[in-house]
Image 1 (tube, each protein chain N blue to C red):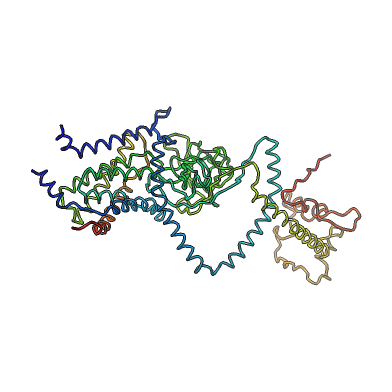
Image 2 (cartoon, rainbow over the protein chains, first blue to last red):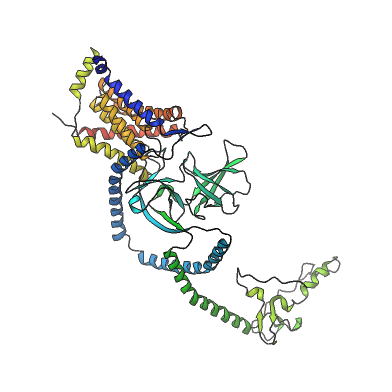
Length: 418
Length: 173
């Protein structure tokens, strides 16, 4: 018996290790109600322990490599690539000023939207707090697209937190370790995010396909879905706040498994294969964050003088327009219009007389064509004063019509017919 | 008699390395395997833990050590993914065992043999991986044989370049 174990010890060790791993695999797989096998998304404690060990072994060297790479890059940027910083700084300052004005313009709409949401008992979640993190490593396997961040539970990260960049969403935190976190990107087949198409307002679930592209699955075929349409987060998955950019529609393909359904392939807005720094949304609240409120206050403070300047500019242009001679005066007969005034220092050049006038010649509509005179007559008539300008009640000062004066987006009262 | 001759050959040509090499080389392979795909952006057609497993299994010429080495490397690889732990473990356990068993019988100093061995063991590893996922677990992983072929070629080329470097680390009497 002893000789049997000695003789076959290699094979016995192999078998023992294989059986142990197969048993370990069996406890990680479960059968769904539809009869398919799936991996348990929630790791059992022993599996989590192995992941923790692996992370503790691999992450510190990865962090070291990444920081040394960053150090080299910062050396380059600090000492060599500083030539255009001043120009860039000025451009960025201009961009900030412009964005502040835009933000101030949109602020009223946002507040109105909030009031309406409050009336409808619907609370929009805003990104309240984010944490910047560096992507330091990957799974090392092309079957798993997860990657690792250099921040973990010690920094306030938790499972199912949304990971984004300035361009768009990236994924969600799948697992958290003390000083690192595993992120499941949106192009992994096991991921899922609720999305909505911006124009058609069609909702769907976004997940990765075999080629590593995110696609919206399980939506009915719709001719309105076109290439280039923007895809946003729908906000129903309780992970990603509503309205974050996801990407644009790249193409529409029929669902290979179900008739009349389509898969919408999405070009992600975030560069998923070139991620370096990401933001983890650590908190969402139904109100603006202190930083956002500070920005809004700055925008409002900037809005006052800027709005005054724009108002002054508009008033000056109106006064200037009134002082300049008009091309048509509704109070004068057609033959005494300024266009025909011989004292005008810059007379209007008239086209030369046609040698052979026909029905296309201005003012020479043939009488034979039925209805032609009727069509030509209104054009010959001078325009009514109400069309462009209205007289002031005192009869002296003329003001532009209210329609022309109304700002874009401003609500005007519709006129009622008596 | 053949077993005896194989054992005696193994005792004669068995390689020994400093303890630090046994720790640092596999660790470096795991770290680089996790880090390089981020740098190479989808062109990481190699499996460094597999190459290192094959190297130590061939050099040590001990199926038990090859098995244990493969199992440890595979389990670490699995732990870094979000998939089930054990798939790569089983794959590399078998590869380590086979590499050590082959190392007893043939001359593994030859570069061509190393190249061919790595290529075949890489393809075998991919086949076992698919078998476990599809047959044992009943899952349908994303899969491309072309990628696996590229990976096998990449592993072979890396092995040809890396093995002589690692040979220099062995303890010589």
